[in-house]
Length: 269
Image (cartoon, rainbow, N blue to C red; front, side, top):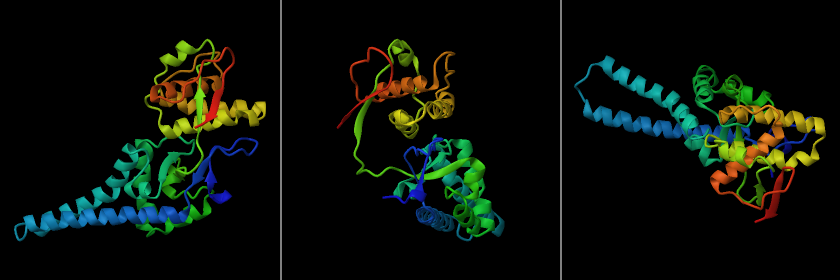
């Protein structure tokens, strides 16, 4: 079980935590070590193959350019490409069940990955890793300098042995066509998970907290799916519609549509 200080998420005004487990410094260090080992192995292979192919045929300058360029591309290109196009994971992070997300819980994008990769200069190169360790130690969410600049954090993905319940988010009455028209193809599983958690916890929130947290979640979701929320559609209702559309797209649990109101229908698997 995670220590309370290792948990993170979207915290409501009533201190309700929406199911994120923050990655600890130890697991982040180990994940980085695995990534560096992979980078080192790839670099050794490149050096060996290049050395055999050009033995005695090149001057010193081309050799320096090739080896220096390869090192730069591996150190900065490896984390950028993996985090940008593998949903916030590198091979080292994936091995430890870690993932980079934005502070809102949304999937990290190319800009986030680029900033994190570039700030390795400060986190790991100039300060020999001390900058990353100090920043992670003194920040509330174990965030290194690159995370603070990019607006990201590293989370531990949920354990596989957690009891799972099938929850069907039916289209709200009168909004069936609206749900059908939502394009949720760009919505990632972890973003849907945040929406799902909120919708399952709304009954525990005071009306004001419920309203403001729904607004906080709906705004980035509408940007991700490139959709303007219509006037008169409450943020919570929009989130239910998005969850319903996501389940329809991905074959989630389906129940009979409700005759009024909106909300989930649940049952154990």
